[in-house]
Length: 107
Image 1 (cartoon, helix red, strand yellow):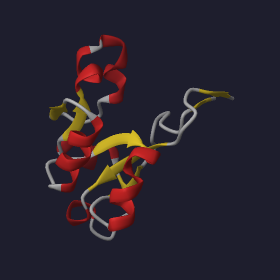
Image 2 (cartoon, helix red, strand yellow; image 1 turned 90 degrees about the horizontal axis):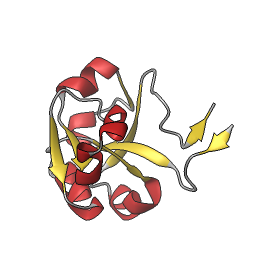
Image 3 (cartoon, helix red, strand yellow; image 1 turned 90 degrees about the vertical axis):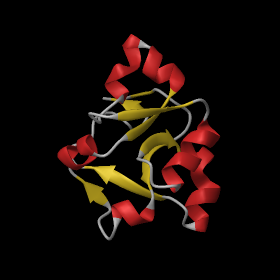
Image 4 (cartoon, helix red, strand yellow; image 1 turned 120 degrees about the vertical axis):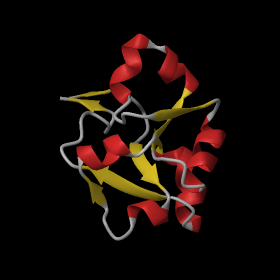
């Protein structure tokens, strides 16, 4: 295995959307908007990071986290960037059933 990042990548959502389920199917995340950073949206080589049929663009990670906490959608972020909001309960971590390489490690 080859590490892609030196940090953990996680999927996050607002607690209201996630409810009691810590795992969502790919079909569930596809119908809910994904908040994507602008550079990912603009890069054709990074389009594989966009799972949802609809997405909103955030200019930076702080805007992305705020948009998720307001219930506008879900996102994939570096865990260390989201720790404060995870600890406060403003956002929660979840897994995507059959999730692709989001762990930061290539098999």
